[in-house]
Length: 392
Ligand code: NAD
Ligand code: MG
Image (tube, rainbow, N blue to C red; front, side, top):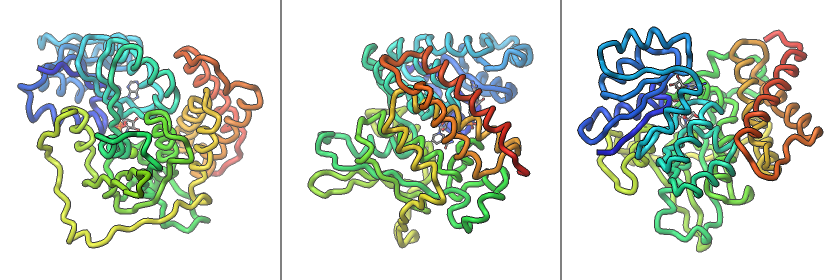
C-alpha cells in the first residue's frame, strides 16, 4: 500500500487528488490531510479516506476540527509549524497543493525525508527552485511536476536525451480578458477576473491566469525544474487549452501533449508514475474539435511575461521577491485597494527597489534567506500599494 499525504486537500487540486484516491481506497494508506478554514470539508475527507492526521493551518480552527473528528481516532493539529511537522511524517508520496509561498517549508520537509513530492505548488519552485532541486538531490527524493504544462513537458521527455531539446513551448489560454479591448483592463473587477474560459481552479490562480502572472510563474518553473535556458522557453496563446505544452527537438520534431482541461490527468500521472493507469478523464474527439488555434502573446496586454524574463535573467532571490510581491498585489486587487492593471506595476516597483538595494543576490540559497526576502518584499509591496492613488 502506498502511503500518501495531501497538503491543501480542501482546494481545487486537493479535491481532484482526493477524488482519485477515493476511487481506489484499498490501494492507499492516507497519512496526512491539510487544509485551511474549511474544517468541515477537511474532517469529511479525513473520515472518508481514514487519514491518520488532519491539520488546519489556522490555530483558531483547531477546536472545531477536533470536535468534528472526536471519536474517529484521527489525530488533529493546527498552525504553520504543525503543517511542516506533518510533512516530515513518513510517506511515499506527498501532494503539495497549498497555494502560495506557504507551500515551500512543508515541501522541503517532505524532500528531506526522501518523500516523492508531487508538486502543484509552483510558487515553491519560483521562490526557491535552486534550494528545492538541491534538497531533492541531497536526499535522493523525486519531484514530479503537477502543473499541466510541466507534466506535459515531462511526459514528452520520457526516453529522450534532454541535451537534444531545442525549445519548450508552454501554452496559455489567455484567461478571462484575452479578447477584451486593452483600454478596458483598467476597470476589470475581481469578479470578472475570477472566471476562466477552460479550467475550474482556485480563485488565486484563476486571476493569475487573467493577468498572465500564472504563465509568468510557469516560465520560471520551467527554467528551475528542467534547467532550460530562458531563451529556450516560449509561450504561445492557445485559447482551447487542449495542447498543454510542446517540446521541440534538434531534428525539428515537436512533441505535443494533448488532453482535456482536467487536472486529474497530471495528478494521476504523478500518482501512478512511472506507470500509466486508466484515469477518469474525458477522451478528446478530434473531429468535433476540428481546428487548433494559436496566437502570439501580446506584451502590452500581459506585461507580467516581460517581468518574468527579467526574473529568470537575475535568478538569486528575484523569484522570491517576484512571487511575494505578486501575492500581495493580488490580495490588494481582490480587496479592491488597487486596480487590475496596478498589480504588475506594484511587482515591478518592488523588484526594482530591492534590486537597487542589492537584495536579490545570494550565494547559497537557504530557506531562511528566502523567507526573510519574501517577508521584506511583502512590506515593500504594502508601502507601494498604500501610495497608489486609486478609485478601484
Ligand atoms: P485553492 O485555493 O483551491 O486551494 C489551496 C489549498 O491550500 C486549500 O486547501 C487551502 O486551505 C490551503 N491553504 C491556503 N493557504 C494556506 C496556508 N497559508 N497554509 C497552509 N495551507 C493553505 O488552490 P488550487 O487552485 O488548488 O491551487 C493549489 C496550488 O496548485 C497552487 O500553487 C496553484 O498555483 C497550483 N495549480 C493549481 C491548478 C488548478 O487547476 N487549480 C493547476 C496548476 C497548478
Ligand atoms: Mg499550469
